[in-house]
Amino acid sequence: MADDTDAFRRYLRAKRTVDDRALDRRLVGILRERLADRAAASAGPLRVLEVGAGIGTMVARLIDREVLPPGETRYVAVDRDAEALAGVGPYLREWATDREGPVSVETADGDALVVETDARTVRVEPVAADAVAYAGERPGEWDALIGMALLDVLDLDGLDALLDALGPGGTYYFPITFDGATRFRPAHPDDRAIERLYHRHMDEKPDGDSRAGGAALSRLREADGSTLLGVAGSDWVVRPADGETGYPADEAFFVRHILDTVEQAVGEVIAVGGDGSLSAADLDAWLSERRRRADAAELVYLTHQLDLLGRVDGDA
Image (cartoon, rainbow, N blue to C red; front, side, top):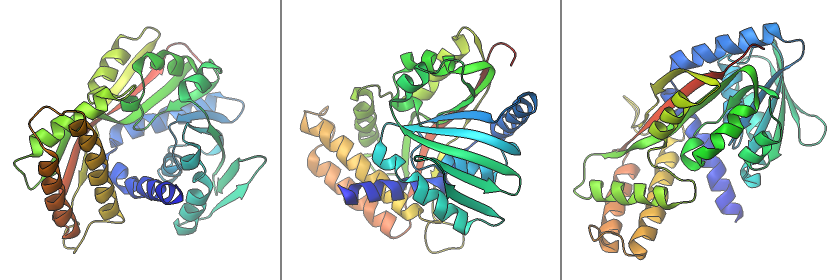
């Protein structure tokens, strides 16, 4: 179990650089402006709720990109995976050590951490809880709600509770929402069958949806009491670095983790009958070829995703 937890935390760390490239910069800019305006109009700290926070890569990113405004922010990081959430402190301390510029991470009361830079003080409060339940118990409490790679594993009926957690004029941001495309290059004859069964596994999981991006876009466009401000693509593109002998940062591990995930998901679908298009032996052969390519830094991995940004109606 410890090995699985360590591997998943490493995957989340490795994913940081992949997400950094993928996130739409225009929407990040709008989020930055809205949070600055909100902070200027507020007497107390900016209140941010992140659901599905993992090990805390988003709060580090928001500080790095100066999306969180100068001054004080209360940042509550909710995740139902307590073991992943226990990685917030170690990750933020590692990030602070590697970061250019003055930054400190100190333990506060309970599990809270205080991240301080020359212009920002961010109190990070990890909370192990169900996101929808936590948000539903705190209506109107937050200035901003963030859920990265969340809506493809969340029953969209829970969106109302999430949006209701925002105060009037509050901002929601749902980046990296999977939307129905998984690709590997170079092409392989079994790619389409693999993709079909992989997405079927997503669809058959509780609250899963392989086309969550489009479904969430429709729900948010039609939602009463809120306004969609922007939508943009945020595709993952993982490939060997130009002029280098391998993948950037720890993205070789990221790619191997994705292949392990495909192996488990597609293997489960085949085990219960599949659709006749792919056998267990076919899957093994595909994985062997893909892993060989990954080890040689020749495999390219792509997915299609959406970033969604909006506001709830009313004035702060």
